[in-house]
Image (cartoon, rainbow, N blue to C red; front, side):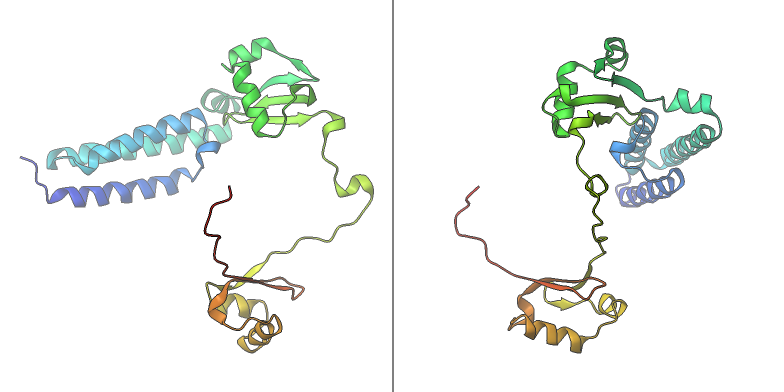
Length: 234
């Protein structure tokens, strides 16, 4: 007979162990996972799900299996860092799909990438004409990196010999009408200065301020709450 009282405890335990294992293995977004990481993630998650509803005798079995999978993943990561052969076997290596405008059919086939799929991916990166692609590389994470032809490269400031001003981090000094005192203090300002700026921008009610930002050059910007139109236009 299942002891229902133990389910909340095993669920909390599985979540706690998953958190510890993720700290051990290292956090990765799904787009940065290799196939090996993805498979291990599925396996550990499946065991964690079983652990949350496991009976008393099965709890330790599932818990040990989770720890073993986590340690194996961590160990394989260490081996991949130290030995190139292990890295190639576990993570793989990038595959050149296009080079100098030439499409390598064998590499497309080896990577199991269909041309329609390739075209959809490059369109998402803003290249609707594949003739404008010089090089395309399938990364180990499954993403495709693209180098456009020389005539299609975006212009940067260095190309036209200008010296743009460096962007600065904007500090939020107000959120939803409330003052972010710590950020305001870090920027060398106080509430008295802030109240003067609010009056200077002709804002009558502090609660009307949805967001206020400040940069290192003392440029302050206020964004007030605005009601959306009654009818959607998009």
